[in-house]
Length: 555
Image 1 (cartoon, rainbow, N blue to C red):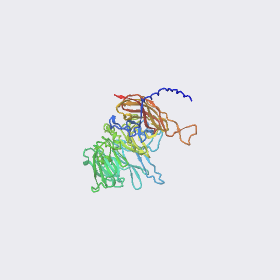
Image 2: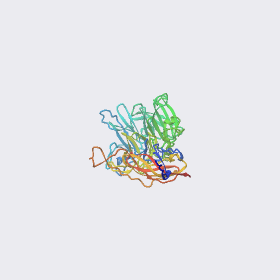
Image 3: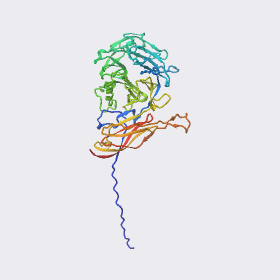
Image 4: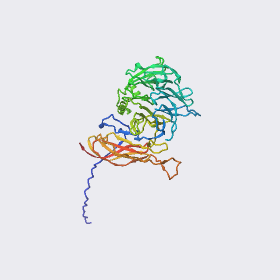
């Protein structure tokens, strides 16, 4: 067979793959809350420089709920009184009991109002008790106390004295029945420790106590003055449960106005053999008022000019002596510097208080800043241990009642916090002011490249929620804290309860969904931070953000 001539085949040369000129990274939301303890170039990407109207959670930053009006017109229409103190009363609730829990508001008109039941904006509640002669009207101290048959709400106020409430007897003035070492009208603080009622005498270092289990009777005195080495008067007392080596026991914690902290143990304060000091610390002066201590679990927190201190840390020689222990997974001290500055600047103003809210899994610090738009509270999420702050909630006073947080305002209102999607919602459900979450994350170097310039091109904030949030976002570089332009708008869907609306004619509340979208970005720098404002349904969760950027050279 003749040979077959081979014909060469020619192919075009393969094009070289286009070089990649973009990089990307994904960064978690600041689940560890606010942190001002690190330099810009070494920040934890899970922390924030700004975290407002959000709560740090394990999976992201949760938009707080709004507040609904519960009661209005305390003090009368046109003469509204400031709600200085909120008080909760819990009676025995055994089988067949008809006794009801009560929520009371003490106002600066010298009167107490029953605000247990919500009322509309037209109602004018009547007072249930008058505390005549108060030196600081509305500024009362209270505690709950149980005898063999009855639970009592104990209330004292300087200038007036001592009054109690119970579900059967109502309000009863106890001044005449309380005698002995103190004139009843001079006491301005009350607390219960080991089934004894203790009183603090106004502007003194003396505490007075009743016999075990007694509501009234002859008081005895204990003067803590010689142990308050920094001077001042006795300011507040609290019970603290711990095991200090001798078994679990309730200790008595005493705080002086100049910052001395005394811890006593024992049982009978009339005997040195059974009652004595077990520890002494100094934390700096606390803010004005009596409510600067708060219990959470087995710990006791104290507000002072150093911020927030915890008895457990002081007991283990940490706290002020070792404020930022390496490896400490509690981030409670990473924001204390801001709180301490605030306390120092408002030290002479009443209004500071500490309140643990189990339903929110958080501790709330109420501050003297109680205006409707600029007022502020600090929130410490107890599970991931992270700080944030709230604005738009005009708290003068607050109390947890039946698992919910209620607060009083300066214009005669009681609000139910975190109960709806907007602030100042009317009792009939009319929508109020939109809650806006503001976040600026820590500065991070994408892909851990800390020296090369980068130009962000696109970002993708990622959310979870029942409804799509509205947001505005930008990238800040090289320590900028510039905010976004404008404010995001949000219109809530009208939802219906299952079984109460006609199918096909109502909008049904959705399940939890993920929401994300690419947004344009600008800037130039080695480090980046996302700044965003967002609105949505309460509980909307900012989970993470992606960034696409162009890498550059070294500046």
